Each structure stands twice: as C-alpha cells, then as structure tokens.
Amino acid sequence: MLLIKAIAGLLVLGAMGGTAYLMKQYTGTVKDLPGTMMERQREIELSLKKKAEEGVRSDNEPGEKAFQRARELLAMESMAEAEEKLKYIVSFYPSAKSATEARHILGEINMDRLLDPEWKEGKRTITVQRGDSYSAIIRKNKTTMDSMTHLSKLRDTDARGLRPGQKLLVMPLDLRISIDLRRKNLTLWKEGDFVKEYPLLKVEYEHKGKDKHLQVGSIRGWYNDEYVSVHSPHYRAATKTIILSDKSLAIRALPSDPEQDLGRGFYLSPVDMEELPLVLRPGNDVEIKN
Image (cartoon, rainbow, N blue to C red; front, top):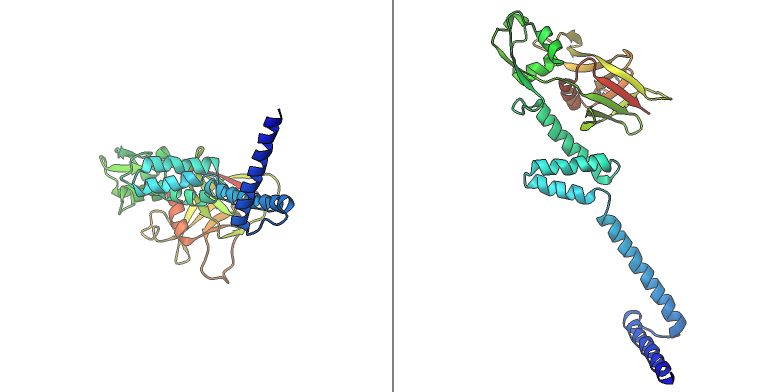
C-alpha cells in the first residue's frame, strides 16, 4: 500500500513538473505554480475553445456546405445535382446567408427554362385548326398572347394571320405570386416549388391584419403614354403594368424620374417588369403577406 502511494505521489509530481515545463515554454513563467498556472491554463483553454467554436460556426453555417457543393457542381456543369442542392437550401434553410444567392441562381435557371422555346418541359406544341382564333387558343391553353408570341416567335399577331396546320408552342401559365411586405420581395411559385424571387424596390401600400388574397386582373402595355393592345406591333416594346383584382393595386416598373407620382402598388426594376408579364396571366393567385 505504501509503495502504491509513493508511486502515485511521484506521478503527481511528475505531472506537475511536466506541466510547469510546458507553462514555461508557452507562458514564460512558473511563478506561483499552483494558482497562477491553473488560472493561465484556464484562460488558454477558454481561448482555444472560443476559436474552435468560431471555426465550427463558420464551417457549419446552415446550408453553407450544400451551397459550396452546388457551386462546384455548377462549375462542372452537373446541373441536375446542383439544382437539388440549391432547392435543398431554399427549402430547408431559407434564412441562411447562402439562401439569398441560392434563390438568385435557381431563379435564373428556372426563368431561362420557362422562356426558352427549346426547353420543352411544361410546354406543348399545338396545331391550329380551321376556325381557331388567338383568343380561343389562349383561353383553352391557359396562356397569354405575350407568352405565345415569345415562345412561337410570332411576327404577325393579327388573327387573320392564323393558318390551319400552323404549329404553335404554348405554355400553361399556372404560377402564383407571393408578395412579402416585411422582406420586400415578390416570389413566384409553381404549386409548392420555388420559381424566382424579385426584390421590391418600392412599396406604396400599407396593410395590417390578415394576409390579403387577390388575383392578377389584367396585364396592360403602355407605349408613348398610350394604352396599346396585345396585338399592337408596339406591345413588345411597351411598358407593362400588372393590375390586380383590387384595381387600386398594381405591379409596375419603378420610374427613373424621382419626381413622378407613384400609384398604389409594388415596384420592380424595369428589367424585371419586362420578364414577369411573360409568365403570368389573368387569374393567377396573388398573396400579400405582412
């Protein structure tokens, strides 16, 4: 028993001596070893722990690893895998730092496909029948003249130009709009899937209480301060306004003139307002969230 105690005592002294040596190497002193050493050791441990935690936080930022992997996959042109990573971030980490950029990239991919006549998913080719009209085709296929003109690369939108046997590419426009007043953005959704997010540059609208549910009422074009029909040759170059079912509200392009009076509604960039009307139609659901 005495031998065991003696060995234990030597081990303790050896440990203290080793610690004293290390403390001298790293702190420069062993003065007041028992108290000072323990205090400084505690400080070092806390410092190392803090650095370790900071490292863990930076490496494990929610969604960050998935986003970095998505960027690598995009660089390797592995689009399908990259999309899955981006969708994962948008769905499960919508507030993460990387989520904003993930939404931007995913939105560009989605919109490029929606507007690309060569991307056939979600689109179909129809054959014009005798007696068909543009309005009948649009109504039957839940689309718009603007979308059909773009996808079918039509030059003449006069109904008299329709020919039996003519092929037209149509895309049913079944998106819904969510306007988030707190986050100041407008998001397009297809059922439960994210499509694209647009920043609201200005909001001229106040609403308190429950979320408001409306629809797209109409989409109008203005050219040289005059309303132009969708069949007008000037329509493609016209400034578009999306009027909601509450006709006092609209989605518009923010004018460049800061002195111009603004109507009630939601303002996007002119570039975004060239794109958005191409994928919407009257009847699309609109939700305004506080």
